Length: 392
Image 1 (cartoon, one colour):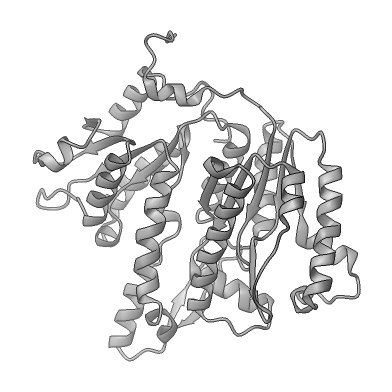
Image 2: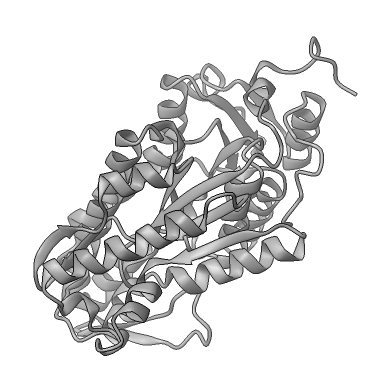
């Protein structure tokens, strides 16, 4: 057993009372289907004999307005919409008093026929006393598909990407306003089985270290053996830590496919969502993707850095590509530098036979030859908590 003297300094970040009550607000734009996602989170927790009470603001608003057709509540006059929301929040504040863990499923903003408007009132958020705010995000094409399948609204892919940024910013500002600025997280829906575990851990295991897994993505997408290595690395980290994985939301390949389709004279590309069941393919206009080219690159750049900022450390996997070339992309190099400059612990799993450059060795806290070696070090240093595989 590690003593206080032998424990790594980063392990001190864990000093948090296990099972401390957690009151969380989860936001996200329409089209993410947060309710389905949270139902999976609740089941995951229940399987471990842990109760997380879920409060779905939208469902409760419909229950209080039986005259409103399904999917039409946002078409109400803003005055009635605000009145309904305040009534529902009042009930949630009262009902949730004394509950151990709660998640309130709501929105920070709406971008609808009324334009852009808020979806909360500061006084009620303060009365709820949240400990944590999370903004759930998903791939823009998946949100586009769900939004148009469930509502009659003319929203382009670019509209959805802009709305996603607005939702993240509004949630972050709300967290700062009510004193939860250091406990605001962006969480990707992506691979629901894994990100659902991440959500449950944020509520029930905030003592676990938060890790950003870094790895090459775009230029290895057609290398199945390398992708299998990377997926094994991602899964191993997710087994023991709270991970904010950049691969769970990434429209770069979508853009590359749209560019290729345009060159071939195609007007549509076929897409699939990661989380929906059944995972039905759908058509996305090529022009709408191309219109978002700058937004896609800019949001990847910005969002990945924010995921690093909300993590305790970065662990990067550098595979060896065919011919012995290190699989070190410009994106991974920039992530490592950003983490180093922001005082994060920087760990690198270096697989190539070729030695890393000084730009890697001088910024890395430590290098490892394999994922297993890295995990063994983390365990020795007390960085892997007992029972960290809870919600595995």
